[in-house]
Length: 84
Figure (cartoon, rainbow, N blue to C red):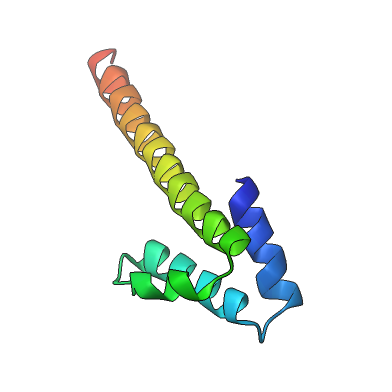
């Protein structure tokens, strides 16, 4: 979650910057599962571009863990039903 925290600081401290705007668009598109114009990433300097790529990686990993929690909850529910 390091990249997400970096982006959050940029969004909060530099609200009017290009990077803050692009990070906001990226995060909202990931959360809402909507389209994101990948060309926007090329407007970032290299350091922020790398941060954006890391955000995507972290988001994917987080979704994996969220799915894992959901399936675990379902499995525990089934186990509970069978044990009654």
